Length: 258
Image (cartoon, rainbow, N blue to C red):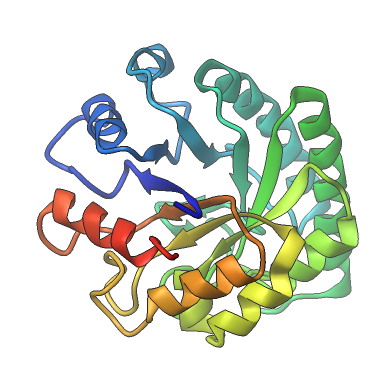
């Protein structure tokens, strides 16, 4: 298989507790993604023996605000400790803090000051990541459907920030579900992002379910990733349209390129 595949445990097997979800995902041959870390039994998750791919890398703060950016870095130190328990290599941050999926402090216009604040915050995260042996990944978001009010969230902005930082421990969490809603042109985006990608996340549009349930032709995206030389992790951050096992198998099939 060309890619390492992971599945977000927050969105599938929702009738099970999070530990059993992780165990079941692992048994099916996938790595596990989680969101928050502060409200989970990390030791119990570690005891499943599952491989963990990524998790949220901060608790509070907005990268686009100087004081908020310092808070992102401060709480990221707690995330680094949690990541060590699970062996998580990638920690996800956002341009602005999300609370229940919504912008904690909505801003609808980006400024140069916001850009510089985010740049400096990411530089500090890069140094923290280098010391801890983890990579911080800045995730692009869509502001049309899911996350209105988060500035600097489009894929082109998050990519530009990551490239401007130029630190090996700062990469992009390229979420193709969000990119399709906000910008489209996914194949070109994959080629453009190139070495800046730390991990890929996928879901189909509309509905945010597994590949094959919407408008994105994910086998073509998988081919573009392969052709660009990407051999890293692709994570399904999607709900199951029906049976969770069937959803995971559809995801595996979409990214089984030869």
